[in-house]
Length: 133
Length: 60
Image (cartoon, rainbow over all chains, first blue to last red; front, side, top):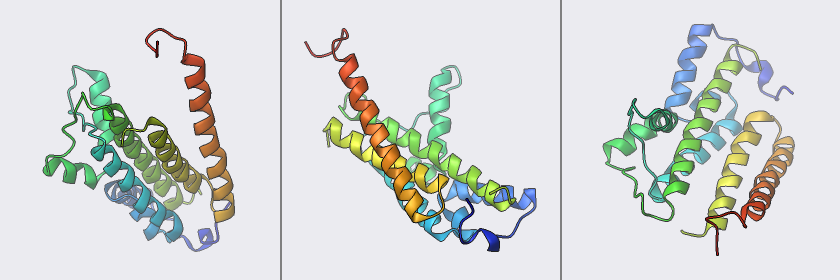
């Protein structure tokens, strides 16, 4: 069902829409805000960083890109899905993970799911921008 | 924060919220889908936890 703002959302070229999706990946929610889906953008901007922060607080790990271990590499890719926050956390030395902490696996789950949800949000931005939604 | 149930509730609430906002456009529809997904997350986790309780490796 089209929202009340759908009719005023311009259809962008695929290249521009892809650039917008990259921006939406880098900062969660910014793509929807740019497309005037303000309520959705604010929710994504608030919730996804909170999930990422909870994951770090629970001593989850930002996995390294270790190709010989495919599952670790996939987890790293999912972590990267959160965009700029990944690099901020990495720069601040957060996300080392504490494997003996009771909340370690919960932290990993929050980090990975926050990243994957942000990828979905970025793909949704692309769909809206090219007029599919 | 080591309460497994609290972490389950927080995770379910936030994940359901993102899915609901992503999939629906009006606040009313989003609220309904959020409730449905949240209940589904909690219900599925509790039922699966109960079913797996007697498996080896669980509480003695």
